[in-house]
Amino acid sequence: MTVQSRQDLRGLKRIGQIVAFTRKTMLNNLQPGITTAELDEIAGKVFAYYGARSAPRLTYKFPGFTCISVNNEVAHGIPGPKMIHGGDLVNIDVSAELDGYYADTGATVVVEPAPLIIEPSIFLKQNLCRCSRFILHQSISAMRPGIKLNAIGNLIYRQAKTSGFTVIKNLSGHGIGRKLHEGNYELLNYYNPSNKKRIHAGLVLAVETFVAEKEKYVCRSKDGWTLKTPHGTLAAQFEHTIIVTDSVPIVITV
View (cartoon, rainbow, N blue to C red):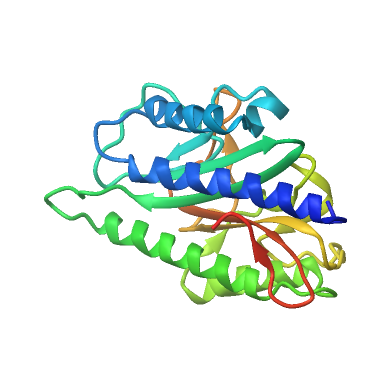
């Protein structure tokens, strides 16, 4: 979507605020002992209060209000009876619609308190989160009219490699605005020479970073939705919806 009017800007900012508030509320309630279904129900109540609708449920009939992925689950985890434990790596991905406008946001955290005996994997999980969050901010800062999407993908990949990690190649950021996934604005996490699309002012993008421990691809689980690493390694996703401007991008999901 390209923002055409003040009404577009107001609508996008409003739904951006709602999904950001939902993400923060879910993270504030994330603790050992809660199930992913209970966490998801919090999102359902927030959506109902504001009159918003779950984007994955509306668009794809996803069996939950939000996607909650644990440990080597990287994306599209189905909320259910799974109980959260201290030290788990948890990704919360929130997207919703209000008055015909969509926004999408996500964050990955290590659940506290960690186990009494600190395992090396805790430090790995924390480093993945720090790296993915940092690269997301770097990517957003680089967004300017005229920049090619593959240049942003190259930035993401090189930053991850410099930090000793890699990226998930079959997940990406995307255009958004009037639909959850829009147009030909696929923002891959690596350099694709054929992806020569350029960013323009007013463009609405969901910018996502998928920084991974080792594996470069995820596979679909038997449930038909959850995407996980095939060998149990870890990855961390962060995401914001932005509006490109002639100067600094507007981040609507902070």
